Length: 508
Image (cartoon, rainbow, N blue to C red; front, side, top):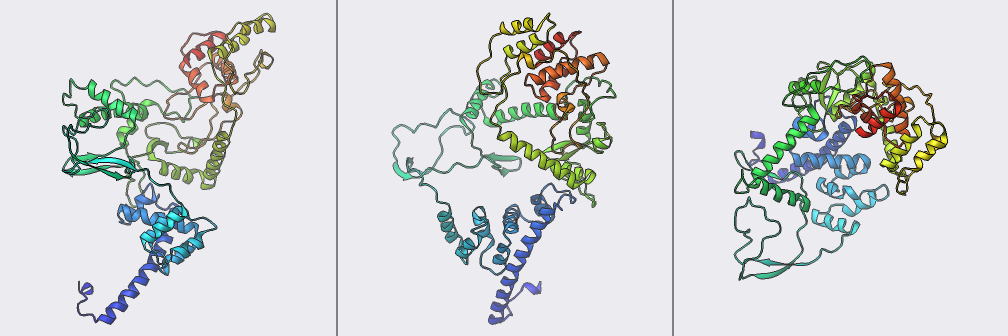
């Protein structure tokens, strides 16, 4: 306590000590940013049961949300341009200035910007930013200002009217020229008003506004006053029920689980398993640090196999858990290796880049396309008869798409024999890899959320499904679409290729 009482310190010593502390604080800040950047680069927050560097800075290091964001942003840009560390350490720029200038730093202008920002105030740095990235003038608008003050429209605050409230008749006021206010970001805008009461502020579009007005009208028999809080509460109840059914297999009357075949896809997690895992783990990541601290993340949750599928993991209740995306990736790297997972992510990124630059869109799948292909696969006395059936179909619209295969391209007999249980990827939650060879044509899927997979049980249906798979892939259907169509039509009685294909197309 005595160390912070300075009334006995002489003036000259007080000033010299203050200058020394300021210099130390600048060097300490630069070192702190370097440590934050390195911890984030190594992802050392993950073993501490934190899903991000922000969570680690606020929960473990004890920073406030604003202080954590400011330091993390400054640390990121300073790691890219290490000369910023030196500028902070010797006091040429302050932390707020680095955050303000961060979006404008480039390889060729860092030294120039730092020289211009040396010993500048925040206001002066804002003028520097305006010179670096000029913005157009704001349009001028005329707004009526009530002399009594900016009071809101009369009436219940919970009412929602389609459009702005009209000005009161005969109202006096003055006109002011002012630029329109910039729209607020509709991110987290809730504010505690009283125990259990919160104010919600959000910007919505016209379609959302129309939906609110309609929901308000439809709920009038239960909510005569049209309170928006009650409308929102009802809407969230319905949304949560739908999401719980999709994500966790929730149901009022769960069906009896079917026995899994030996050749079932181990990446598919049955609904009954998802329900039990959700009831056991709750809607929270289950990763626990060595110190016994559980991750608090409740967003971006994923189902994870405790043992990687590539190592024999099975989708059982004991073998499945809930992890956040960050810890799912972390566990994948621990089991399969960081280099292996990095290579998979790079390959997936390269595939997304290639697909984004593909100029040829997917072919338009119409009833005419499908009928043409069914016709070519029907038993006919000759290829000419098959061609005649195609000519009777309605022509497909002309689009800028890759050409559909012709009769000459259609194999009249299928000789390929493809494994139906080949899967892509090695760990749940890892980046998907593109199926190649037989895996792609077999239409296998590893999407745990969809709950659909193809699992033939007899040799004859397997051969028939392979024929249908080849035909649908040739028609332009994706691997996942083909797999779902075959799975959903599995119960249809179809002894021939034609009937089986028709059933699959109808299911699609």
